[in-house]
Structure formats: C-alpha cells, structure tokens
Picture 1 (cartoon, helix red, strand yellow):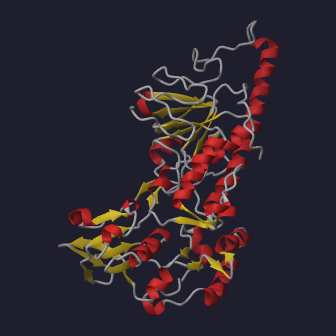
Picture 2 (cartoon, rainbow, N blue to C red):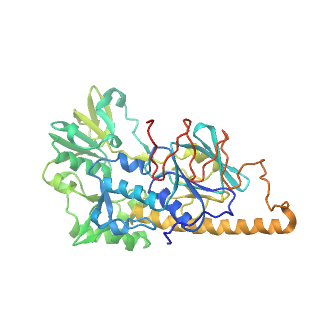
Picture 3 (cartoon, rainbow, N blue to C red):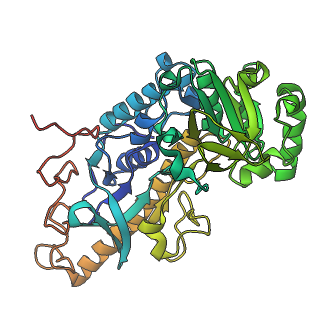
Length: 453
C-alpha cells in the first residue's frame, strides 16, 4: 500500500462515509485515501479508538504485534510481542495522524437510507450527510449485553457488566463472582485472583476450548491462520489432538474438555479462550469454577445446580451485541442474529455501495482481518468510483453539461464545488472533512476536540 498521502480525487461528487473510528474504520479510510478516494470517518465519541480506551487495564492483544498492524503503518518494536491496551490507543492516534485522515468526532449516525445511487446518513443534530458509499465499522463488541436474570435489578450496584471493570483494586478483600468464561471473563478472573480479591469464582455455562497463547514459541494465531480455510471436521480433529498434549485437563477442577470441536464452536460464534493466567489460577485453587447463573433472590445468586452463593460483587462478562438494527434494520441487510449478510468487499444484495468490516470473530486475529478487509473494500470502492467518473465524463461529452462543464445536483445543490455534502442543518464538512458541532467545534485529525478554553 502507498502510504504517502494523495490528494482526494475531484471526480467523486460525494465522499465515502465510514461509520466508526476504531481500527477497522481507520484502516478503511487510510486504504481509500491511498487510492485517491475521499473518506470521512464519523465517530460518535470524542476520540478515535473509543472502545480500546475503555477496556480493562491489563488487556493486551491476543495476536502478535507483527500480525496486528493496519495498512501503511507497522507497530513499533517497543510495543513488544503482545501489545498492551494503552499502546493500541497510541498506535491508533498515530495512525490517524500519519495518514491525515478526515475524522469527525461527536457525530453519531442513527439511520442509513438509500437515495438513488447514493446513501443518506441521518446523524447527530439533524444532519443529513450524502455519501457515494458507506462503510459500517461500528464494531463487533458494540453494546454491552446483560441477561434478564430474574431478580437482577434487586442486586443493585453489586452487579456490573465487564465493560465497567478496569482493575482489581476496588475488589481487594472481596468475594467476587465472574459470570462467563469467554476471553474477557477468563482474564478478569485471573486478574482478580492475582490482584487481591479474597475469593474468586467463575460461573460457566458452556465449557470453552482453552488454548495456550504460544506453544514452544509458536503463537496460536499462526495456527488459526493456517487452518482457517480447512474443513471444519478436520480442524476439530486437529484441535482435539493438540489439546491432549498442549492443554491440561481441568476436569477435576470443574472444566472438562468441550464436547464440540474447536472449529464447530467457532462457527457458532465462540472462539477459543487464550490462557493468560486462568489455567494456573484454577489449578492453584485461586479461581473456583461454579455452575451457570440462573437468577438473583434475597441478596443471593441462584446457580444452575440448585446452589446459592452470596458474593460481595458480580461481574457479568456476558458479551456484547452489534446493535445494528436501528441503523440498518429496515434495509434487509442483517441476518437473524443481527449480523450483516455480507462482509468485506461484498455488498448485500440490493444495497450496492454499503460495506461492513469487523463483524466476524476470526481465530486468525481481528486486527489482521480488519487490515485485509480494508484493502479489499478500498479496491472495490476505487474501481466503482472510477467507473462512475468515466460515466459522468461520457455524459458531459455528450452534451449533458453546461458551458462550464458543471452539472447541477439533482437536489438543487446537495454538494459544493469541492464535492462536500450538505447536512440537514445547512452545515458542510470543511476541506479537512470536519463537521462543526452545535458549538462550532471541530476535531483534529486524531479525533480530539479542543476544550472550552
């Protein structure tokens, strides 16, 4: 990929709007800019990488630094092999600056609609933004999900979602129940066990596959890349053989081996749990495995095996929802689980120019797949933009334009001379692609908004 910034193409009437300023959205915007296609990133928070800023402190990428870089910028060696959360945030800020991305912060898109060959985005403040294409990159882990357990509202502030967890300090000396044994729940349980909690229990409904992050120096991510296109049954068998000598049997501690294969579970949406301390904590008795949570009653937690426990705090690592229905549910582009029916460079049927990235949970690594998707989406959009420009040129040559060669917009001026879309309040993104907020403020290229001073 060419990383030297290119001037945006004057041929496109409207920019490409990228919804979401996380790694997926930034990668697509950079790949488009490298191909001369103007892209404007819309981020509802006040800075890029909002979800990474909010994660718990000890989080690190479960994928290696070399296989996690986005197009056009390597991750520094100083980050180490397993990149820390804070370094990911710094990397995303640097990425936006290096590629001179056009980022508008504080703008949330509520609805996307088709308008002829273009797309109209209904955004914060009544804005109506017209784009030649739209890339949805709002993230796989978008909206925290808390099950409707009976009696959970009576448990009050002692029950929180894992998104509110930062570090073990507030739980020092407490009896804590962690609900859910995905990667987040497993890591929080291990963090608590080593961070001063008096007792840590981990509620498990479905036993996951637990894999080592590395085996003899070989990262699990590389294995995921090698097997990702093999038949499911074959990967299941290979995973079972590997588990016999690479993963300890924790049956005696309440974690028997899963009854479904690794690839089968991944297709159901459950990727393997990478061991970053859980196995040792379970074997040492620092994390106790208990049955799944069924509800809350009289200040106690009801478990699936009929037992009751009374922890001081409950942390629910019960996952997230994509929450795409309000944005796109009316377009018939989502499946029964609320996930896009098409991904990457493919648009859903009847929705040409609408793209999705980051809505899978691959064993080959999320950042790696975001980078690959970005290049593919950018290539497709660039080709379509070139075709559209050629068609407009042919129409003008045939007498479709006036003496100056300019063509009036069908809606009476929906785009300025430089191709900038007008929003519903009459506001226009500036030449840096920024839309003023209600106070007239705009963000800088890294997505930061100046304070009132």
